[in-house]
Image (cartoon, rainbow, N blue to C red; front, top):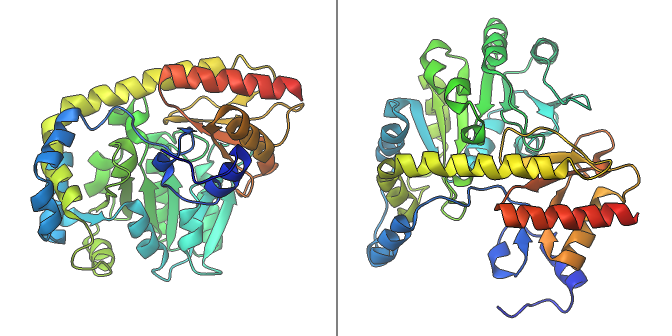
Length: 365
């Protein structure tokens, strides 16, 4: 593909200011976080064979979509709201007029989607970035939050919050009449995802809602799919009422129809992602002075060596000199944010090339 940019620096300036569309440019994307090993090729052949019908016809609406997601995750459809990606649902939830408390650093959309003055940020302290649920609940009580959000594994730290701690948090928040939103978008990449997910606990806690981006874990970022799961029917209704009649396109509908056929392929793909990620983490540990946190998701959060340049400069040089794009964390609510980067795990050869490029850049400073 012919580049629209005149130089690597020009390309970096343009790409670092856009969201998505990276496939149109020839660089290795270690920024966006998705499963490289799913869906299987059979799915793409099916879509290609039905492209006319999918483009020319209206898709189904919310009730039927909830049934398809319910079939996939073994949950009643009345507990499910299907979104055009999790981002659509986040926007609705954050716009409900309730104060929202969220640990930071975290996925920026929760804070960005809330009204001014309605979002309270709870700092996670370095170097561990672990969530203290008692202090978090105390902050929710202090600011009279109606919604508390946690992302597990968290983005950008890639750290899982143990299920037992989340259940403890749920019980405390229930006494404060505070709803807990647990974003499990990356939980399938955790080694103990079946034991750590709260989906099986959903009917025990009416103040619990689980949010999940299917785009990332199922490798379908361009299709845009996410869902909300809750046994709190009033909360589900309030979210559902804010959706248009048709918020999901025919390609997304067809994916949901086919996904249950590929359960084993999906499980195998997540296992491959974990293997690649674990090797990536071990290789990153070999860079002198770099401090990577042990990841639970499909990306690694690192503090750069003290002698290295700042995150934005390291990110720029990786792109300009090596055609590799990562995410620096400058601008996140985080002490010394310009010293941190987040790197998505791809295939092992691609990860190894990134490690060697990063090693060279850090060593030259």
